Length: 513
Image: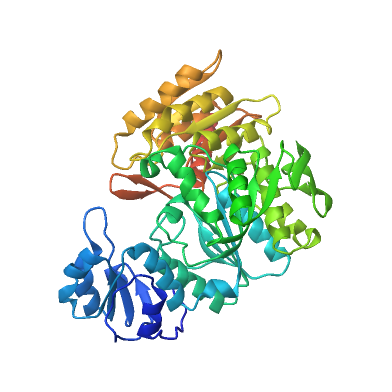
């Protein structure tokens, strides 16, 4: 997605913006940028990056035929793109240069809006929804970017997704431009560790950024927990942020605070247990969600959320801190924070009267599973907690056992199933999760291999009684399941409803026989 109108940028201005580049003295004006040769528009700068299997500069000639008027690449790419017939800009770090060039080409659209960025292992999506809700309650026009998609004032912006959470720099800057053109006053976005490591948000300076927590995730990409943290820490530097809101209950959050105090980024802290600027003094479960009291620089405040659990208390306090740090008042944002709900995040599936409670959540790390099940447990009055979960294929294998462990430590019944197996054997993935669950299961805890996801959900519904809570974890809002190279239609929410209705019909038929 791009703005409908882009003023072409002179060749000299592009070259001047890129440090250490080598380029022809004269070249064409540029009106767009892309790193996908299949999505080139007339007047684009095509970026040839070194990929896992092939250098993108190999497609420079094809990009030129589709309308690209110049190529940005490295020394190796310049050789590969030599026959493209267009001017070439050679830089030592094409990724970094691509982000700077994209911001320049689209007119630095982020500068015209209030920018909010959120990173952390868990809680990014919910916190983003809460910030959006607060801004909209205050009358702002808000663009959102993240796992659940791209939206403007709650309406989806149709666009082809190239990444799971944070788009590549050309797509991101084009999206900023489109949002600004359509009247957005603010942008709230999730900033993934991949995006930070791959410099997708370089060229953008956020007004307020936030750190939720750090748990085990994405080690297939980052390799170590320290490298994972360092990727996220990039967001809290003067180049990318003016103010950072930090959860200091997390030890990595406290580490970030120390860095920011030395690098000049303003710090605002939040917590439940540690002294902080925004400190929760008490919270309890209410009829709709968590009710919390929080001490803030503007006074003692009460929030009655539509979301359950301690982790959503943390998310809400972080959202409030971000909003007030940006200059909004508590009274302006309170209604939005209290009414916000998030698709696929502790989402309640209505099965009708006389039914067990069914919840769907995106939790897919040990830390997130623990938080989700703790929140689900708080909703139980005398019933059992039934957890349905699996682990993704082709991802960090070391977290599979711990996922089973934390589930068995909290649930009365653990049904292990498939998540997104991708190219792996689902039975091998389930076995690893089951091993962790069996090792941690206490007396009376039932651990089951539920087989396929539909079978596992069906089993949970059959076992459940009125007063029980079923928590289906891992996919949340997703509407597809990745099996092999295919994405098969699968929505936990719809499958829960369909299986429950089928069971009800079967029960009625049995009565009439």
